[in-house]
Image 1 (cartoon, rainbow, N blue to C red):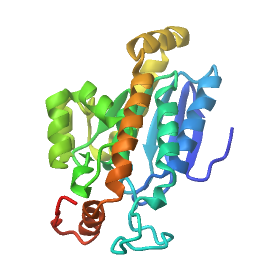
Image 2 (tube, one colour):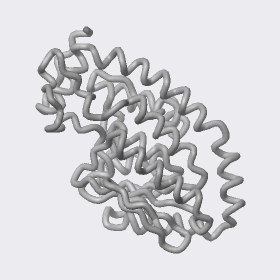
Image 3 (cartoon, helix red, strand yellow):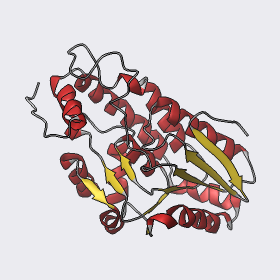
Length: 267
């Protein structure tokens, strides 16, 4: 099995486990998403693996993008700087995101902490989510002066309904584990120290079923989803590209770093 830089990969019986290892906040970038997609491809090729658990070390499941990356050459206050540069190519990131949606076997996400922005997108790409009261889900794009990505404009409303998705997008609010469970964003709500164990338990229950039956049924249930995600990411990328050049985006990122309300000017 391949050894990866930012994730741990192992099998346990008929379960594949992918653990994000960028604690404490597990910020995402194109490389992390590529590694997860590659691991899922390995599990798809392994006839012994029937379901996957996606989990994480540290405080958060995945806290989204790290706009404080010290390797970024320019600061967000620099008019020439782009706060999203450290993500790597966003177009490449979305190619990898679509690969995750093309995985053939069920995925259970163990969301023990924050799943923010792209981290929410990663959690939503799974078939099921196990959460806890401490979990926080947020589509915080508009608070950054940005547009949702990772196919969330398709995947989130399909999961929780159009109006609930609009509420999350338009307010950028953080949704608690209890709220997520009520709206269907989380399938199970358990104490924080039981999140991973319950995710594995659910994956093991799935793995008791026929592997061919699982693949066939999942293909039917998710028919066309990856193609719709692909189309959505193309539009999302177009919107994000022009928004990245705006003053509002730089101000949104700067305000988030400084933990204050943004002074947006619509330009």
